[in-house]
Image 1 (spheres, rainbow, N blue to C red):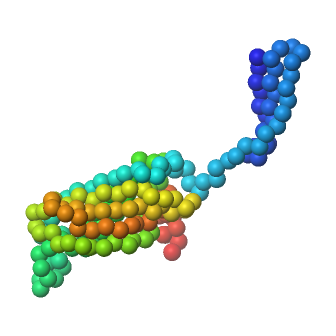
Image 2: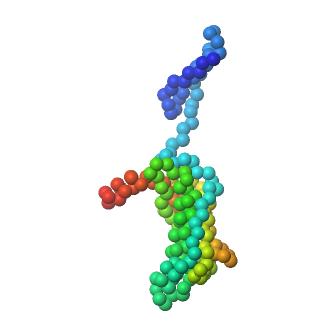
Image 3: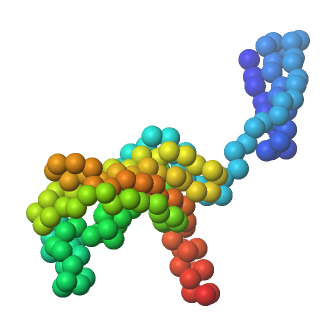
Length: 167
């Protein structure tokens, strides 16, 4: 048995199959191709990432302004959530690819004090062909302190840096 394929890919492929000297089947079929704007491996919906930190003075509102209370700041919580989202997607990047944040929609629902252990979790919810939507939550030792979504997109670091240099 011999199988030979020659084609004008990606649309049409021709196939010839020989079972013996006199048996020959020739056919053509359409190949479905996946057009990607990058080389990133497919990311399964439900892919997860995590990030943790212990609240230190530098993570508090007081570190930004002396009159504010010494509680975990919203910008630090968002940063931790973005890190978790990055970690959910990064294993699927190839070469010099990374993901960058494109959108945030976060609620900071409870305060955490210095010494609290904060854990952010991220779960990939969807991909529209360009942007990933990632559900994020943050918890301290006692409760959920924040939740929302972040958007991320895949970029080539090399191309990104070149684009930034061009202005």
